[in-house]
Amino acid sequence: MSTAKKAPEKKAAAKPVAAAPKPAAKPAAKPVATKAAPKAAAKPASKGAKGKKLRTAAQEWKGQHSHLFKKAPKVFKVGRDVQPGRDLSRFVNWPQYIRLQRQRSILKRRLKVPPAINQFTKAVGGSQAKELFRLLKNYRPESPEDKKKRLKAQAAQEAKKEGSSNVDKKAPLALKFGLNHITNLVETKKAKLVVIAHDVDPIDLVVWLPALCRKMDVPYCIVKGKSRLGHLVYKKNAAVVALADVRKEHAAIFQTLVQALRISYNDNVQTRSEWGGGVMGTKFQNQQRAFEKAAAKKLASK
Image 1 (cartoon, rainbow, N blue to C red):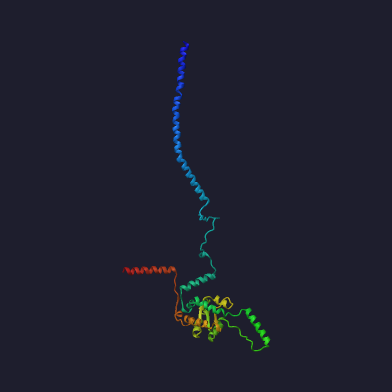
Image 2 (cartoon, rainbow, N blue to C red):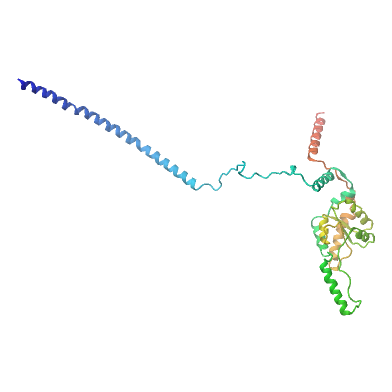
Protein backbone atom coordinates (compact mmCIF):
# COMPACT_ATOMS: atom_id res chain seq x y z
CA MET A 1 0.00 0.00 0.00
CA SER A 2 2.70 2.26 0.83
CA THR A 3 4.32 1.69 -2.57
CA ALA A 4 1.08 2.43 -4.52
CA LYS A 5 0.68 5.76 -2.83
CA LYS A 6 4.25 6.79 -3.44
CA ALA A 7 4.07 6.11 -7.23
CA PRO A 8 1.57 8.84 -8.09
CA GLU A 9 3.60 11.31 -6.09
CA LYS A 10 6.55 10.61 -8.34
CA LYS A 11 4.42 11.18 -11.47
CA ALA A 12 3.12 14.46 -10.15
CA ALA A 13 6.64 15.61 -9.48
CA ALA A 14 7.74 14.59 -13.00
CA LYS A 15 5.04 16.65 -14.78
CA PRO A 16 6.29 20.08 -13.72
CA VAL A 17 9.80 19.13 -14.83
CA ALA A 18 8.59 18.47 -18.43
CA ALA A 19 6.42 21.62 -18.55
CA ALA A 20 9.20 23.95 -17.47
CA PRO A 21 11.21 23.89 -20.74
CA LYS A 22 8.13 24.66 -22.92
CA PRO A 23 7.54 28.17 -21.71
CA ALA A 24 11.29 28.75 -21.88
CA ALA A 25 11.29 27.90 -25.62
CA LYS A 26 8.68 30.51 -26.51
CA PRO A 27 10.53 33.48 -25.08
CA ALA A 28 13.73 32.20 -26.73
CA ALA A 29 12.21 32.96 -30.19
CA LYS A 30 11.23 36.53 -29.27
CA PRO A 31 14.71 37.79 -28.49
CA VAL A 32 15.87 36.55 -31.92
CA ALA A 33 13.36 38.83 -33.64
CA THR A 34 14.30 41.78 -31.41
CA LYS A 35 18.01 41.32 -32.15
CA ALA A 36 17.41 41.23 -35.95
CA ALA A 37 15.53 44.54 -35.92
CA PRO A 38 18.39 46.59 -34.45
CA LYS A 39 20.83 45.08 -36.97
CA ALA A 40 18.74 46.37 -39.89
CA ALA A 41 18.50 49.83 -38.27
CA ALA A 42 22.25 49.98 -37.57
CA LYS A 43 23.17 50.14 -41.28
CA PRO A 44 21.98 53.73 -41.98
CA ALA A 45 23.52 54.83 -38.67
CA SER A 46 26.91 53.58 -39.89
CA LYS A 47 26.54 55.65 -43.14
CA GLY A 48 25.86 58.80 -41.12
CA ALA A 49 28.95 58.15 -39.01
CA LYS A 50 31.08 57.84 -42.17
CA GLY A 51 29.67 61.16 -43.50
CA LYS A 52 30.51 62.85 -40.23
CA LYS A 53 34.04 61.53 -40.45
CA LEU A 54 34.41 62.88 -44.02
CA ARG A 55 33.18 66.32 -42.96
CA THR A 56 35.59 66.55 -40.08
CA ALA A 57 38.48 65.51 -42.36
CA ALA A 58 37.58 68.31 -44.80
CA GLN A 59 37.42 70.77 -41.95
CA GLU A 60 40.80 69.59 -40.73
CA TRP A 61 42.26 70.06 -44.22
CA LYS A 62 40.87 73.61 -44.39
CA GLY A 63 42.29 74.31 -40.97
CA GLN A 64 45.74 73.19 -42.12
CA HIS A 65 45.48 74.90 -45.56
CA SER A 66 43.72 78.13 -44.68
CA HIS A 67 42.87 80.93 -47.15
CA LEU A 68 45.62 83.29 -48.29
CA PHE A 69 43.79 86.39 -47.03
CA LYS A 70 43.12 85.83 -43.38
CA LYS A 71 40.94 88.08 -41.30
CA ALA A 72 43.15 89.89 -38.83
CA PRO A 73 41.16 92.71 -37.25
CA LYS A 74 43.29 95.28 -35.44
CA VAL A 75 42.78 96.01 -31.76
CA PHE A 76 43.54 99.60 -30.80
CA LYS A 77 43.58 99.05 -27.05
CA VAL A 78 46.49 100.15 -24.87
CA GLY A 79 49.60 98.17 -25.71
CA ARG A 80 48.09 96.53 -28.80
CA ASP A 81 48.13 97.70 -32.45
CA VAL A 82 49.58 101.07 -33.42
CA GLN A 83 46.98 103.81 -33.72
CA PRO A 84 46.22 104.99 -37.29
CA GLY A 85 47.77 108.28 -38.47
CA ARG A 86 45.50 111.28 -38.17
CA ASP A 87 45.76 114.81 -39.55
CA LEU A 88 46.58 116.85 -36.46
CA SER A 89 47.69 119.98 -38.32
CA ARG A 90 44.77 121.94 -36.85
CA PHE A 91 46.11 121.30 -33.35
CA VAL A 92 49.79 122.00 -34.08
CA ASN A 93 51.26 125.22 -32.73
CA TRP A 94 53.05 126.18 -35.96
CA PRO A 95 56.06 128.53 -35.92
CA GLN A 96 55.38 132.21 -36.48
CA TYR A 97 56.96 132.38 -39.96
CA ILE A 98 54.66 129.58 -41.21
CA ARG A 99 51.59 131.29 -39.75
CA LEU A 100 52.62 134.56 -41.42
CA GLN A 101 53.09 132.78 -44.78
CA ARG A 102 49.62 131.25 -44.60
CA GLN A 103 47.92 134.44 -43.43
CA ARG A 104 49.64 136.40 -46.19
CA SER A 105 48.54 133.94 -48.89
CA ILE A 106 44.92 134.05 -47.60
CA LEU A 107 44.95 137.86 -47.50
CA LYS A 108 46.31 138.00 -51.05
CA ARG A 109 43.39 135.85 -52.21
CA ARG A 110 40.73 137.71 -50.23
CA LEU A 111 41.76 141.34 -50.68
CA LYS A 112 41.72 143.22 -53.97
CA VAL A 113 45.31 143.31 -55.30
CA PRO A 114 46.34 146.29 -57.49
CA PRO A 115 47.68 145.54 -61.01
CA ALA A 116 51.26 146.62 -60.16
CA ILE A 117 51.50 143.78 -57.60
CA ASN A 118 49.19 141.32 -59.35
CA GLN A 119 51.48 141.21 -62.42
CA PHE A 120 53.99 139.21 -60.34
CA THR A 121 51.55 136.26 -60.28
CA LYS A 122 51.90 135.92 -64.09
CA ALA A 123 55.23 134.09 -64.21
CA VAL A 124 56.85 132.35 -67.18
CA GLY A 125 56.04 128.64 -67.16
CA GLY A 126 56.33 125.39 -69.07
CA SER A 127 58.73 124.91 -71.97
CA GLN A 128 59.46 128.64 -72.20
CA ALA A 129 60.83 128.70 -68.63
CA LYS A 130 62.94 125.59 -69.32
CA GLU A 131 64.44 127.17 -72.43
CA LEU A 132 65.17 130.42 -70.56
CA PHE A 133 66.96 128.69 -67.67
CA ARG A 134 68.88 126.48 -70.10
CA LEU A 135 70.21 129.65 -71.74
CA LEU A 136 70.97 131.37 -68.42
CA LYS A 137 72.98 128.36 -67.19
CA ASN A 138 75.51 129.00 -69.96
CA TYR A 139 76.18 132.44 -68.46
CA ARG A 140 76.73 131.56 -64.83
CA PRO A 141 79.46 133.76 -63.36
CA GLU A 142 82.81 132.23 -62.47
CA SER A 143 83.09 130.34 -59.24
CA PRO A 144 85.93 131.50 -56.93
CA GLU A 145 88.01 128.45 -58.00
CA ASP A 146 87.53 129.12 -61.74
CA LYS A 147 88.42 132.79 -61.29
CA LYS A 148 91.61 131.86 -59.42
CA LYS A 149 92.62 129.47 -62.25
CA ARG A 150 91.92 132.10 -64.92
CA LEU A 151 93.96 134.79 -63.13
CA LYS A 152 96.87 132.37 -62.64
CA ALA A 153 96.88 131.47 -66.35
CA GLN A 154 96.65 135.15 -67.24
CA ALA A 155 99.63 135.98 -64.98
CA ALA A 156 101.66 133.15 -66.55
CA GLN A 157 100.91 134.49 -70.05
CA GLU A 158 101.95 138.00 -69.04
CA ALA A 159 105.17 136.68 -67.53
CA LYS A 160 106.02 134.84 -70.78
CA LYS A 161 105.30 137.85 -73.00
CA GLU A 162 106.91 140.25 -70.49
CA GLY A 163 103.93 142.54 -69.91
CA SER A 164 102.77 142.82 -73.53
CA SER A 165 99.29 144.31 -74.20
CA ASN A 166 98.16 141.33 -76.34
CA VAL A 167 97.08 139.30 -73.29
CA ASP A 168 93.28 139.04 -73.02
CA LYS A 169 92.30 140.40 -69.60
CA LYS A 170 88.53 140.38 -70.14
CA ALA A 171 86.36 138.24 -67.86
CA PRO A 172 84.02 135.81 -69.66
CA LEU A 173 80.41 136.88 -70.35
CA ALA A 174 78.27 136.26 -67.30
CA LEU A 175 74.96 137.12 -65.67
CA LYS A 176 74.70 140.44 -63.85
CA PHE A 177 73.06 140.50 -60.44
CA GLY A 178 72.46 143.01 -57.67
CA LEU A 179 69.52 145.40 -57.71
CA ASN A 180 71.49 148.66 -57.95
CA HIS A 181 73.80 147.27 -60.63
CA ILE A 182 70.90 146.06 -62.80
CA THR A 183 69.01 149.35 -62.33
CA ASN A 184 72.07 151.16 -63.67
CA LEU A 185 72.27 148.74 -66.65
CA VAL A 186 68.57 149.28 -67.47
CA GLU A 187 68.86 153.07 -67.20
CA THR A 188 71.89 153.09 -69.53
CA LYS A 189 70.13 150.56 -71.88
CA LYS A 190 73.01 148.09 -71.57
CA ALA A 191 70.82 145.22 -70.32
CA LYS A 192 69.56 142.91 -73.06
CA LEU A 193 67.17 140.89 -70.85
CA VAL A 194 66.04 141.37 -67.23
CA VAL A 195 64.71 138.39 -65.25
CA ILE A 196 62.74 139.24 -62.05
CA ALA A 197 61.73 136.79 -59.28
CA HIS A 198 58.02 136.59 -58.42
CA ASP A 199 58.44 136.06 -54.66
CA VAL A 200 60.65 138.97 -53.57
CA ASP A 201 59.85 140.06 -50.02
CA PRO A 202 59.13 142.94 -49.53
CA ILE A 203 57.70 143.39 -53.03
CA ASP A 204 58.52 147.13 -52.89
CA LEU A 205 62.12 146.27 -53.88
CA VAL A 206 61.14 145.29 -57.44
CA VAL A 207 57.57 146.54 -57.93
CA TRP A 208 58.80 149.54 -59.95
CA LEU A 209 61.27 147.59 -62.13
CA PRO A 210 58.81 146.36 -64.82
CA ALA A 211 57.66 149.96 -65.40
CA LEU A 212 61.30 151.11 -65.75
CA CYS A 213 62.03 148.28 -68.23
CA ARG A 214 59.01 149.28 -70.34
CA LYS A 215 60.05 152.95 -70.27
CA MET A 216 63.65 152.17 -71.34
CA ASP A 217 62.41 149.52 -73.86
CA VAL A 218 64.37 146.70 -72.22
CA PRO A 219 62.80 143.21 -72.47
CA TYR A 220 61.94 141.68 -69.10
CA CYS A 221 60.14 138.67 -67.66
CA ILE A 222 58.95 137.37 -64.28
CA VAL A 223 60.10 133.93 -63.16
CA LYS A 224 59.10 131.67 -60.26
CA GLY A 225 61.63 131.42 -57.45
CA LYS A 226 64.26 133.83 -56.19
CA SER A 227 66.20 130.76 -55.03
CA ARG A 228 66.46 129.52 -58.64
CA LEU A 229 67.94 132.85 -59.70
CA GLY A 230 70.24 132.77 -56.67
CA HIS A 231 71.51 129.31 -57.67
CA LEU A 232 72.57 130.70 -61.06
CA VAL A 233 74.84 133.33 -59.47
CA TYR A 234 76.15 131.23 -56.53
CA LYS A 235 73.92 132.97 -53.98
CA LYS A 236 71.15 131.82 -51.69
CA ASN A 237 68.58 134.17 -53.30
CA ALA A 238 68.61 136.76 -56.06
CA ALA A 239 65.76 139.23 -56.69
CA VAL A 240 66.91 140.17 -60.23
CA VAL A 241 69.30 138.84 -62.84
CA ALA A 242 70.22 140.40 -66.19
CA LEU A 243 72.05 139.52 -69.41
CA ALA A 244 74.25 142.30 -70.82
CA ASP A 245 75.55 140.38 -73.83
CA VAL A 246 75.25 136.99 -75.56
CA ARG A 247 77.70 134.78 -77.45
CA LYS A 248 77.27 134.18 -81.18
CA GLU A 249 76.25 130.54 -80.79
CA HIS A 250 73.27 131.56 -78.59
CA ALA A 251 72.21 134.63 -80.60
CA ALA A 252 69.36 132.90 -82.53
CA ILE A 253 67.83 131.24 -79.44
CA PHE A 254 68.13 134.51 -77.53
CA GLN A 255 66.32 136.48 -80.24
CA THR A 256 63.35 134.07 -80.38
CA LEU A 257 63.08 134.13 -76.57
CA VAL A 258 63.17 137.94 -76.43
CA GLN A 259 60.43 138.22 -79.08
CA ALA A 260 58.15 135.85 -77.16
CA LEU A 261 58.81 137.61 -73.83
CA ARG A 262 58.15 141.06 -75.33
CA ILE A 263 54.68 139.88 -76.43
CA SER A 264 53.95 138.37 -72.99
CA TYR A 265 55.26 141.25 -70.83
CA ASN A 266 56.44 144.48 -72.51
CA ASP A 267 53.56 144.77 -75.01
CA ASN A 268 50.86 143.06 -72.91
CA VAL A 269 48.56 145.82 -71.61
CA GLN A 270 46.02 143.40 -70.11
CA THR A 271 48.40 141.85 -67.53
CA ARG A 272 49.50 145.22 -66.18
CA SER A 273 45.93 146.54 -65.88
CA GLU A 274 44.29 143.44 -64.35
CA TRP A 275 43.28 143.48 -60.69
CA GLY A 276 43.79 140.38 -58.57
CA GLY A 277 42.33 138.88 -55.39
CA GLY A 278 38.69 139.05 -54.37
CA VAL A 279 38.45 135.26 -54.12
CA MET A 280 36.40 134.37 -51.03
CA GLY A 281 36.39 131.14 -49.01
CA THR A 282 34.22 128.06 -49.60
CA LYS A 283 31.79 128.94 -46.79
CA PHE A 284 31.08 132.36 -48.25
CA GLN A 285 30.75 130.93 -51.77
CA ASN A 286 28.21 128.32 -50.59
CA GLN A 287 26.19 131.01 -48.79
CA GLN A 288 26.29 133.16 -51.92
CA ARG A 289 25.03 130.30 -54.09
CA ALA A 290 22.21 129.55 -51.64
CA PHE A 291 21.23 133.24 -51.59
CA GLU A 292 21.25 133.39 -55.40
CA LYS A 293 19.05 130.24 -55.59
CA ALA A 294 16.56 131.70 -53.15
CA ALA A 295 16.45 134.97 -55.12
CA ALA A 296 15.91 133.02 -58.39
CA LYS A 297 13.00 131.06 -56.79
CA LYS A 298 11.33 134.27 -55.65
CA LEU A 299 11.57 135.75 -59.13
CA ALA A 300 10.17 132.53 -60.66
CA SER A 301 7.20 132.49 -58.23
CA LYS A 302 6.30 136.10 -59.13
